[in-house]
Amino acid sequence: MRIGLPVIFLLIASAILAVVHWSALMLDLYWQYLWLDVPMHALGGAVVALIPFALVTLRVSLPERLLRPVPVLVLVLVFGLIWEVFEHATGATFAAKNYVFDTSLDLFLDLIGGYVGYIVGSRTQNF
Image (cartoon, rainbow, N blue to C red; front, top):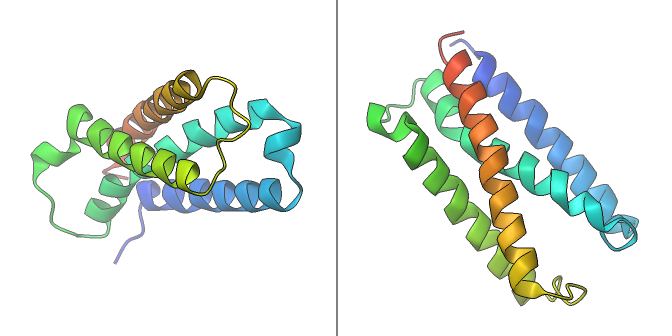
């Protein structure tokens, strides 16, 4: 079985996301540096978008139509919405002065990162 670039990119991006997120939680960095949420949502979107391409690289059979931009971005949006519900349920949104704007921005950043992840995944799918 070959690993392939989408899997490598997914593993690297997931590791970075996990380490930075854990560090930010342990050191209260999200509350000290409010901008840290921006790259984290973008990176999270990229990670989610890379998942279908990594699965195909690992020989999981997915319909070709699921590897198009709209289905991948819908997947990113669903994960982003689930994350926003989780943040709200755990009280992580208490610092947001404008919750609707903050959530909308987070989802937008998820989609931007997801689009970048889609581009990377689709262009490296056969490598």
